[in-house]
Length: 183
Image 1 (cartoon, helix red, strand yellow):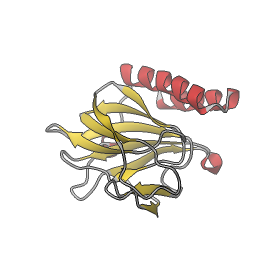
Image 2: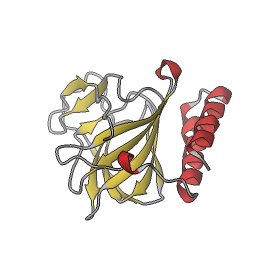
Image 3: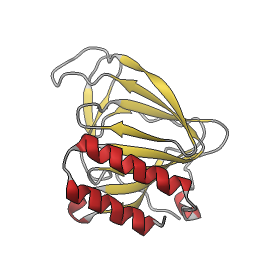
Image 4: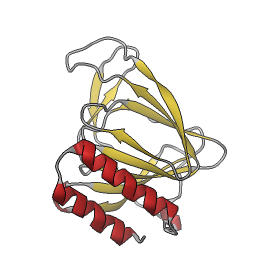
């Protein structure tokens, strides 16, 4: 499967349903097929940063309707606890990541987040990372090599405002992750 075929197939899915649980199931199947095939990211989209994880845009649909990104972590890097405000599907292109999930608090809650457990995802595995009703996690790169994920989101993930949570207090701050430019 080519990247353009994947993009066209996601567009087809989005044209046939607006149920995000169905969308994430179908997109996960497509992403599994992409990872199982001979698709290779250009090397510049797999380069980590020593300072923080990076988000390289592979495709942003017109109007920011959805986006496709290569997200790269150096070993040991970790995201803060955050939400996405949209649906998302992640496939591990290389390396491994540990996902720490939390119960989504009520909008007005100001108490510690409730951990729901963690899962290690490895090369070739695909997960639904979020839907708007289940959307709080942190991710850490584990192992000795950079972790590269291919992420598909139901919005321009680099541009939308998202929640960052303090897991000890439940306090929310808002952020926009932005996009990185490959070298």
